[in-house]
Length: 451
Image (cartoon, rainbow, N blue to C red):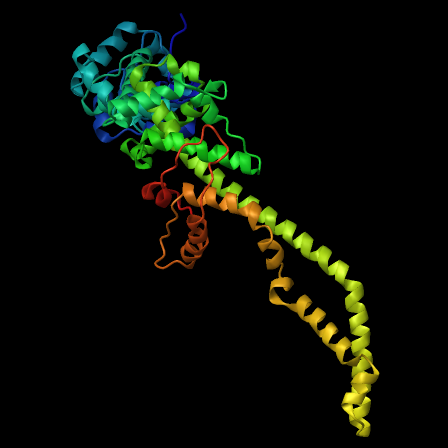
């Protein structure tokens, strides 16, 4: 069976092996006078160097030299330079296993270190669990165990044992996060979560149906988004529940909720399944809210673009008539200017050119063209209210809009638009899965910063 690991080979070497670069060795293996003095008490140079190397190793890695271990040249050179000994003599020390063990016992006793006991495991796993509450990465979790060992004057056991303790701590952190995320849910909440996996809609589980939301800019798709939101809201999971655990740990659960299928979720333990479904509900509510508002904006924008196209077509159709009017008004203007210059009758000048009926007709045509509602396309957009009304009614019924600004004019505009829609008799939305949609919770709206 393959051994479970929490560290990469690079991370494992960095935590448990002495450095092989001189730069790193010079940073980590600096001896203080209290270290040099006992080393110089040895009679022979190779024993002085070997003792100093072991002492430096214990202070750095929390362990002495292992049987047959030869530290990297960078470590030996760095220590040898500080006690003024030729590093070559370390070869003699490496051959004397009995001397190595004797020095190791002496160093361990001098530093008041002790080996790890089984009774220490609970505290070490607890340290790993505290760190794993905010990360899935193995390196900080293992480092938390190492720091706990050193602070309690314990020798580091083998890397394999420390990794097993770290794995146990991470597993405990996951279980604790699952427990905390669903704490306070009642039986109805849990049953509604399980129904996502057992009940069906459109020949799929409701979970799969909600996860697979069509995103095309169509009224039908917008109805589907609101229908999905309705089901999620009825489960009764508040958006701020995600704050009950560390944001990084919640992110891990949310990512699982995004990639796991209903069948895989059904095989999880009860707490993990419910916690993953809670994250699914929270994240899908946020995503569907964003998507619905975005789709609404695109539908309105599409109607505006079509209205603009209609306005341009109208102007093109009016262009020949306007050109005729312009030419007639030019002639009228010239006649009036000439009459004014010569003192002739202005009314006669009008009658001789356009005539009063022609002038009235041309003015009416010009007034229609330059009217503000005609100029910016609002008339054409208003003509499309029949297609926009069901879109607006759907969104205004589904969402409560809030703002951080006092007396926000945008909210006042929304109320003006909402009022006539509420006075009208609403017709059932053409979707069998669409249920009555309550207003969205203020906490969710404020958290997402949506209008």
